[in-house]
Amino acid sequence: GTPAAPKMAAQSHYDLFEQLELPQCECLNAAKDHTLRSALTPSDEGFLQSDADEELLISLRFMQAVRLSAIVVAGPAASAPSELRIFANPPAPLDFDSGRSNAPTQTLPLTPADVAREGRPVELRFVHFQTVRELTIFVPGNMGNEEETVIARLRL
Image (tube, rainbow, N blue to C red; front, side):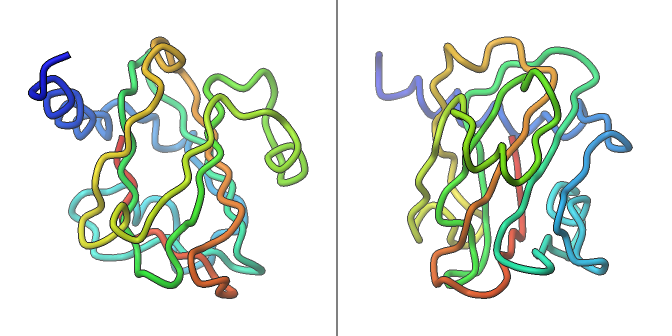
């Protein structure tokens, strides 16, 4: 493709917040005061933080099938996720054990540059994310092996 194509794909993912069925979106192991909605809501100054350990299990449900081309994660250098295990349309709800053991649709290793400031789009294998109704993201750990993982912003 041409150099312009990835930029257009990267810009299109910001709109999907409006497509989320927010009451059906949840995060396991989120701290009471730092919930998933803080990371998803564009205007929110809050953030999502893990509670008991560094793992997070994020479940997102869309009002209709969507196409995903990239994901943006922003967070502080030491406690931002180091990897995302992404499951598109999982056949059954995942728990932490299945998040660790099941084969994800795609595993995305993240670099400090990916999560800096507002975060930068990390491309997904587009062919696997054509008709996504549900997306589960398992976060196994963070960049600095901290006790808690922090996601300041999550955009699709």
